[in-house]
Length: 157
Image (tube, rainbow, N blue to C red; front, side, top):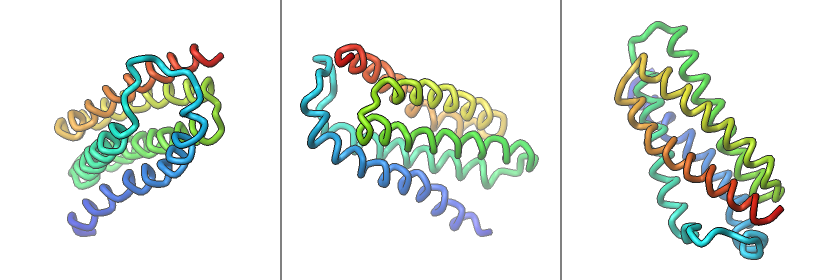
């Protein structure tokens, strides 16, 4: 497969997952989310779309760098599998939180997501250092989101 095709696929995958998850977010933010208690430091809603779009772009580029690398196939397969699982957990967080209003289960999801992102970073680092570094803003934002999720959970128990 040509590298430019891999790049397009790698960038499209997280954008599609994020765009689909955003459908849950948009409906939740417009209704239920407005009514629950949030900490004073909760960012304004308009911040999330550009942040996530950028993070999904970085995730895609990181995936592409690993995919096109000449690392051993088994090593790439494991790294790409970790990346895929974390993307699935990322998607389900929006479903749990915004669609199902299961703040506690969303907390469980985001903790698992954070662990998977770290494992992905370590796996990517063995293959391509830049790919690993491209995921650092992602783990940083998810860590912040986890703290925010916890605060919202505590305020609305």
